[in-house]
Length: 311
Image (tube, rainbow, N blue to C red; front, side, top):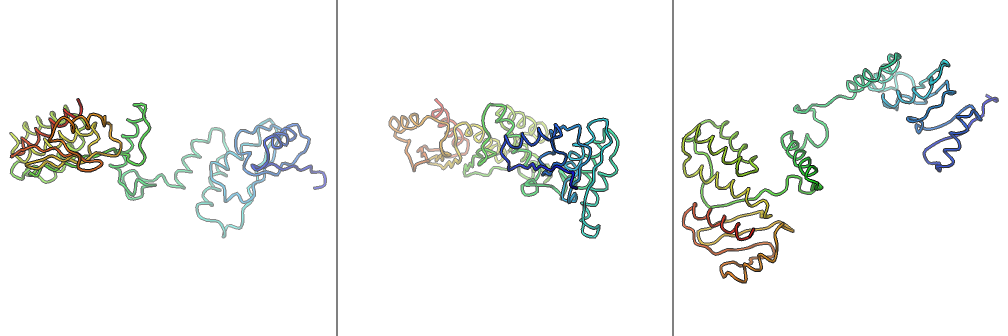
């Protein structure tokens, strides 16, 4: 093709040089542009009437659609040639992409093209076994909780914590049974649902509503169920103090804090200096000596400690 005047454009070129090449092509100072897929979007050259895509089987469906749209942008008849190896060398997905791009010749085919692309690549399943990405590893429920936590943080003007996406979950040991007994709620599935709902309660009001619902459905809760509710009350109250673990014995209460807890260190030092039963048991642990024979008194003792820490 001795009459062809060829120039080259690709993404490794300097900005000014690339701009100069595209301006010359627009003004028809040369008539063949040899380039990469850098022209995929945003290029409008009305005089361009032919595009030749080498190894079109390597391109995605949307990419081929965009490249094909670089020509035929005026009243002139345009042509798009897709060069591929023999059919025997094409993958099944590549064949489907090429068939789809050949069938889409009318105006406004973008939606149908997207549907074909979704059918070829697969949409994945939100709740099935063919899930995509990390959701398959952690499960849909946990993924939803992590997503909800991130959205709440962004709405509050905070940056989501990637290392601890679900924040802290306080481990509480009152050295007493905390459960729903079989004779109180006989259905195993129903007990699991209630456990899950209790764990999802983020406020004391929500926990009070669950308490009322349990009384309405099953009657007054026994001691084990009361301990379970108290455990969740302490969990909710411990979260804003940055407490990761509570161990309440009959003679002492031990609190362990997360790194950099949202609490004034001066307050802890003040309590240690003014009250003899407050002691540090390590860099992140606080031990409070307090006698509490039964579970109710232990819960009350922990709540009083929370009040003093938050004062």
